Image (cartoon, rainbow, N blue to C red; front, side, top):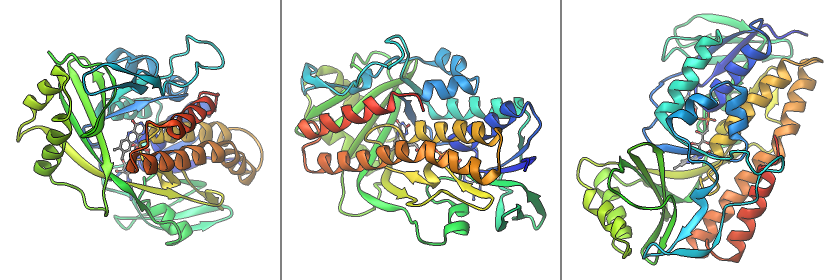
Length: 381
Ligand SMILES: Cc1cc2nc3c(=O)[nH]c(=O)nc-3n(C[C@H](O)[C@H](O)[C@H](O)COP(=O)(O)OP(=O)(O)OC[C@H]3O[C@@H](n4cnc5c(N)ncnc54)[C@H](O)[C@@H]3O)c2cc1C
């Protein structure tokens, strides 16, 4: 049966990738509506690694993002000590199988990524529904989905894609309460700041006081992500998050880190978030609803890969859905193409989190797990 009308719930990475991919792959024949509750992404940064660059190219947005910033290759995985000296070992992973020149990493400012993907979806002819208008209920059947919207209207779609993130409403409608986000045991404090005059290498900086990742999402902008164990899912307010960063920076002798410390102030853009995980341990679809991205498989950022997986999900789903064969077979092909890769990211990230919490992240097991995972993730999706 032909899929003519699709509703994508959630306009994040997974949702926009699906919408753009479906419009391109069907040459505009499939109508795609996107429901979103807020297009304001948090103002932090994100590494788009492994094959995310391929997915961005397939969506036609790679060049635009690379122009905003290209931090090529996995430099973010180099390790540095408290005085800024390079530590032995690297978590850079192997080169791409199809050529050492394949760019495997971009670091993007999330609002830039959201804007570029949103514009591309509109240009491709996806219909972005008014912000806040979304699904209130679903009647899922083997031949289509009757959707009740929050404004009381109703529509029938051939397929609904739940790309609505870790707290997915669509997942709950389809799978009930079986899959709930689970606190993974660590918090993350992230800070976006002006990087002018800060001479600090992009990479992972390690001292007895703590570990932080430093990257540059665009010219003049620096990004710090500092993860640490916490007994319960209780995020820090801005002042306490800032105090945490100050404490970590205090353990570094590197003058650039002292410079960072001096820049931290009450107005600094510091946010704290708990890492949570979800894994749908069965096919991610039922009848005519499929759940993708963080809604199906969310994890901590210890491989920096959840966003890449979400993008890849959208691209692969669109490719399968615009192919041939019965819808259920196409959904099954999508699931089989994605399951192992997503599970690798979920499980490896959580194990790396455990190692970090035990102070062993930079040890041999962490290096082995990271390099094995990167070796697999660099293979085409
Ligand atoms: C601290 C931290 C750092 C990270 N760093 C990285 C990184 O460096 N690299 C990387 O690849 N990944 C990273 N990730 C993971 C990455 O952020 C997620 O995996 C990615 O955002 C998932 O994309 P998604 O589209 O599935 O979900 P989301 O990005 O969560 O998008 C879901 C969208 O659905 C919308 N929505 C929610 N409910 C509804 C509803 N009822 N109706 C309509 N819309 C709805 C939301 O507003 C949102 O826009 C990090 C995560 C954390 C917590």
